[in-house]
Image (cartoon, rainbow, N blue to C red):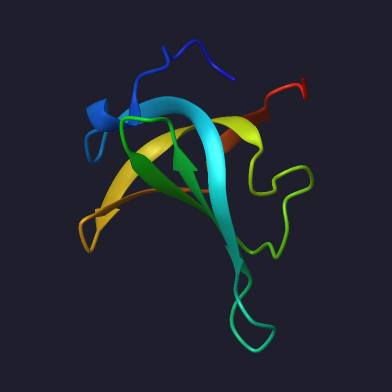
Length: 94
């Protein structure tokens, strides 16, 4: 990951680069008849943000409950903040 400082999800703004971290609440995989996409919802206690990995049906190590840091450009769609194909770093399992 880069040297972008970690901020809270409540601080993210559309069209800006952000690095956030938290716990994965849920994952969603598109059905096999749709274009591949793996989506996770991240929560840090101040808010939630979705990360969408286009072209993938899974990302090894990312499951509900995982702790992860994400970095990318924030997009807003339908009042939901999203990161598309972000860089990610899994936190070590305690």
